[in-house]
Image (cartoon, rainbow, N blue to C red; front, top):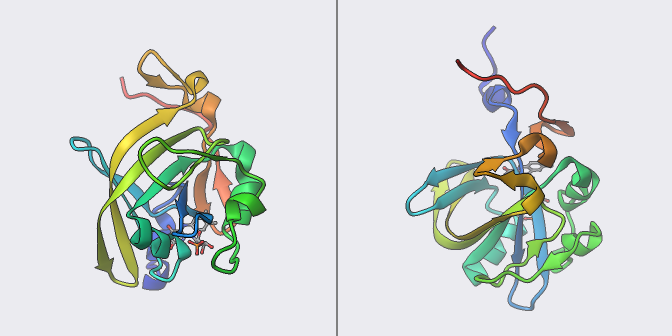
Length: 180
Ligand SMILES: Cc1cc2nc3c(=O)[nH]c(=O)nc-3n(C[C@H](O)[C@H](O)[C@H](O)COP(=O)(O)O)c2cc1C
């Protein structure tokens, strides 16, 4: 079958999902899930995600020039879902969701303590792309909980990251297959 073009990306799934945390000039934090996310350069380390231009996340990033990409595990699915709800600008989803802010080392935006890992990012540029804006950032610092990384390897089954299928549906890592 051919797909309606309005649905084209539905089979580009599952996708990694991240929680992007930001702060505004009044010091109020914000967090929202994004699954249109990808690494775009290893050296220098750079990441990009696509957002609706109207999201508060974009407003804050334009204000401060930075953001944190947090990797959520299955244990905070309900909290991630709260962060996706539409709150008035100036209301902290991090607080509403019962998540814990942690001070970042290199950026104003806070990290989310409950995450598997994080990337502290400085805004490189914002590009208009169709009905989204592409936020491109330099990764200044990356971190992961010790228990989820050993011998240069990501212990992904133990970390149990959320993977987004679409709408309220998520997947978790099941079987890992290896090419011989
Ligand atoms: C799993 C999941 C993934 C999402 N991915 C994106 C995305 O990639 N781009 C986007 O613009 N919105 C995405 N959204 C919607 C935003 O997270 C949502 O509209 C949020 O309220 C925006 O918050 P903000 O206005 O505080 O930035 C996603 C929502 C969920 C639940």
